[in-house]
Image 1 (cartoon, helix red, strand yellow):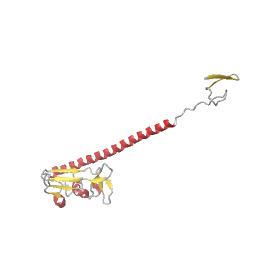
Image 2 (tube, rainbow, N blue to C red):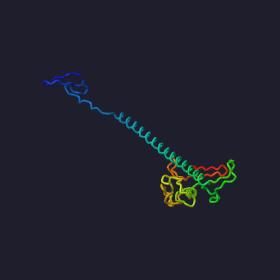
Image 3 (cartoon, one colour):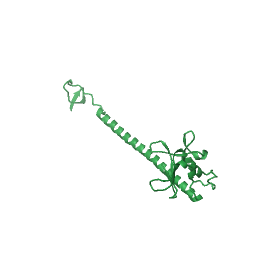
Image 4 (cartoon, rainbow, N blue to C red):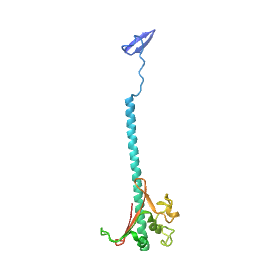
Amino acid sequence: MRQMRLSGVCMETQPRTRNQEPGTVKPPLRGGFTLVELLAVITLISVLIGIVFGTAQFVVKTARQRQAEVTQAALENALTSYRHEYGKWPVDPNAFPDNVITNAEDGLGRRLMVNGPDNWKIFDLLRVNNITFNQNGIPFIDESTVLGMDNQGNVRQRCLITDSKCPLVYKARDGTFAYFTITNWFELDKVDVGL
């Protein structure tokens, strides 16, 4: 840089360029970002947002699956508790003559499978206020936490409390609602609730 004296004031000037007249001062360069730098930052932010949203979706799907598994285990426990309390399963094969599998090739013996909207016929027997089948009024199921589907197809909690014909459902990993499936093995004296 050269120093230039004009009327007693010392000014520092940038070196002259080809088209610049002697004695003129080149305006200082502004501090800023170049287009390439801005595009790089925008790209980086976009990638980070994509990672965060992808992770959030994975966490939500995993939470749905885990909640369904916890409800499944609670329903199996409720059916088993009913069996221990009353000495029989709350599953009546006569109520589902078309669902009884008698000679399966897997060697597990005679069993009853109930899936779809008919699962209310089994879970209704576990309700606290069903005094016909639950004479002791034992709360086998926490009715306030399970999801049920009402007659209009709306999914809601506390469905078992208000509607006796309310099949139990769970929210699947893909966000849709599906019915629990109940399988009762008669020879094995076992019940299974499936997703």
